[in-house]
Length: 179
Image 1 (cartoon, rainbow, N blue to C red):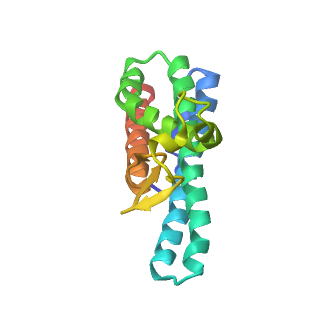
Image 2: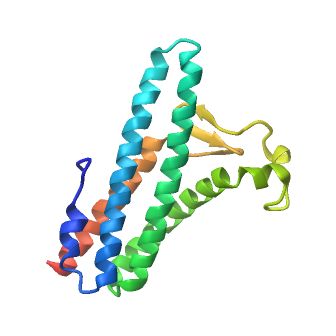
Image 3: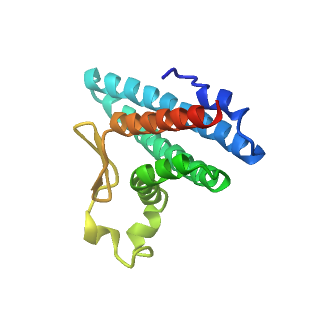
């Protein structure tokens, strides 16, 4: 898949529902943004492997910002696809929704944890104090995975591959349905 993928955008002209066309274009834009974020993240990870202090510490901020942005953008894919799924009546699209539902839910939870850290620390969300779950886990890199609030995500590259597979599945279904 190219960095500027336009497969869904090209198919969108054949979608009979205007909202569906617009949502499909937005969906592809967000998937392209995920690829861009991942590329920048990987560049900083590579730099960090050869960096020395204090540069190594300085690279952590853009890396963690990209992790946060990746989950925010990934959750936008979930929201947009959910709306697209409501507009479309094709059963194959509903199947994709069920297939990727658990993945999208994990992305949403990761974004929620990052977005609501203040509530977690103060115990305002889930009625539990943050410190009781995993003290000090405000973002760590562990063998390519990201750990936050006691939850370890897949490596960002694995998450991106899942988004790409989702994209390719959607392209295949839409080509079959609307070609």
